[in-house]
Length: 77
Image (tube, rainbow, N blue to C red; front, side, top):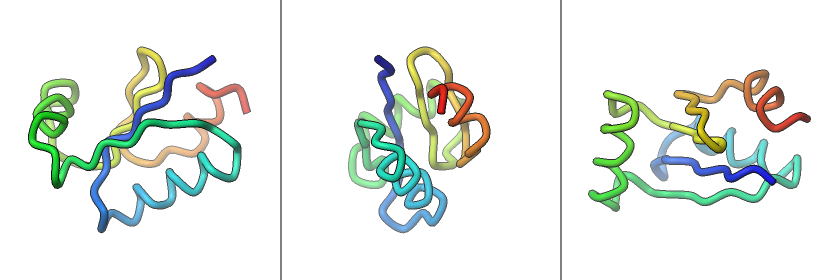
């Protein structure tokens, strides 16, 4: 079982695309709105060194941006 977390903002097109991808592939995920949650924003910046979203963590792997091929690989889809 994979633990999937997405750090996103409400107005981010690629964040919406990633969440749509998860829904279409029945992937459960935890979402953190870094526009509203300072603690999670700081956590994301500490993890990646930047503020771009989406940031997707699958287990111990971190993807910056919506990379469908990499998501499929890490999720074995």
